[in-house]
Image (cartoon, rainbow, N blue to C red; front, side, top):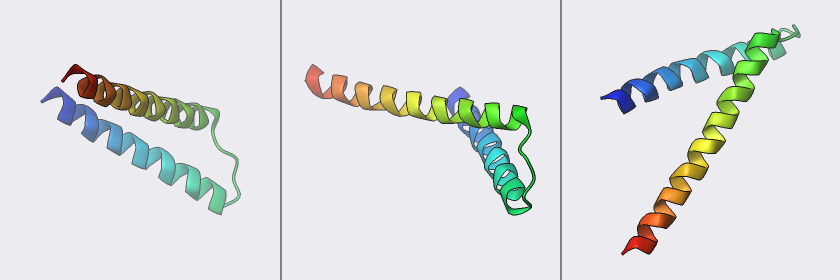
Length: 64
């Protein structure tokens, strides 16, 4: 239950951030510093989650 709620919130936040950043680029406006920081935070969280998923898969393959 908690994982599905987290995935839903993560998806909404990611969609909002990427849409806002692309709209700012299209309209040639500067990005808000908070928007940039949240974007970098989402990128870091995605990279960390990917590394954790790969390490869990590797650990599970070694456990058998």
